[in-house]
Length: 455
Image (tube, rainbow, N blue to C red; front, side, top):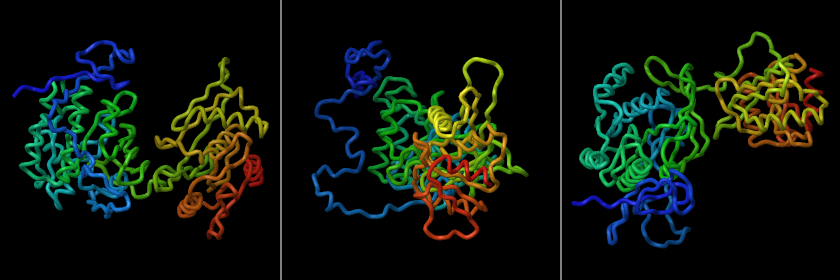
C-alpha cells in the first residue's frame, strides 16, 4: 500500500504548499513550513470524533451530563494538578526540563494505578532494562506494569488493542513517529500527528493517556503550539535540579481548575507529596529581618503563603540603577516604585532594587503588591516589619489598596499557620471575628506604612 502524499503547512499562517520552501509564499515567514500528511479524497478522516462528538446537531439543554469517574494516581499532589485524578478518555501532557523527574513520577503513578487497573507503559527514550533499573532503585512494585519499548505509532496502537489497558503512559511524544509521514521523529509534523492520533485512540477507547513532552530552552513544550490545544490537560514540572522540591503546575485543564499547583519533594525513593507547602516556603529566621515580608497568594484553589525578599542598595558603581527580579514581573516592580515615590515620597529611584520570591516560586497575583512594596520599604529604611504579619492587597496607580480575590480564604490560611496580624484591603475584611488574629483593614498604601511605623 502506497504511503499518503505529503503537503507542507505553515505554522504561522496555516498556508499549504505542495513542496518545502525556505519562505512561506503566503505570509513570507522564514522556516515555518512543516510536513503533514495530505488528505486523500474519499478517505475517512483520521481525526474524526476527537472530542467524542455524535455528528448530530442537538439542543445543549438536552445533553445529559454525568459526573466523570476519576481514578487516584496514588499521589495527592498529582491528583490536585489533574483536577482530582485520571479521567477515562482524558489526555494529559506533562512537560519539564531534563532530569526534573517526569519519568520518575509516571513510573510511580504506573505502579500505584496498576493495582486497580491495567497500565501500559510505552518507553521510547529508554530500554526495558533501564526502566527496570529505575523501578528497582525507587523500590516500586512493578510486577503488574506492562512495559512496551517502542516508538512507532502503529505498533503502539496495536499493543493497546491487544492489551486493552485502562491507562497508557507514553514517554515521550518527541520520540514517537508514524509511517504516514517521512519526517524524522521529533519534527513538528510527527509530534502533531502522533499527538492527535493518540488523542483519538484515548477518546474512542476510553483510555487515560499520560504523555511526556520535552521543553525548549525557553521552558515551553517543544513542538507546535497546537500540541497543547489537542490534549485535555497540560502540566509543567518546574523546579531547580539542585533543590529537592518540585512544582507541578497546571496551565490547562478541561476536567478541572486551571492554574492548580502540586508541590512534591524528591527523595531517594522517588517523589513524595508535600502536604503543607505553605510551611515549606515560610521563613525560619530567629528574629525579623529587614526586607522580608509574607504574602498569601492563590494557586488554583489553594491559598499559599510565601516569603518575598527585597534588597535596596546604593550600588556605588554609577550608571543606571538596576532592577532585578526573581519570580516577580519586572514591569510591575517599576510601577510599584513609581507609586511609592509619588504617594509616599520615598527617594528610591537612584537605588538598585532586587526582589526575590523564596523557594523558586513565581507570583503573578496582583494581591502581592502590598507585600512587595513593604519589603522594599523595609530594606530601604533598614527596619524589619512586624513579626508574624501577612500583607495582602493590590496597589493602584493612585496609591489606593484595591480588593483581591478570595481574601477571606487567604486570611484563614494565615491564621491557621499562626500569624497574628493580617493587613487586608478594607473591602476584603472578614465580617466575623477570627480568633487569635488581628485584621488591619486599609484603604491606601500610606495607611499600611503608618500602621507599620506604629507597630
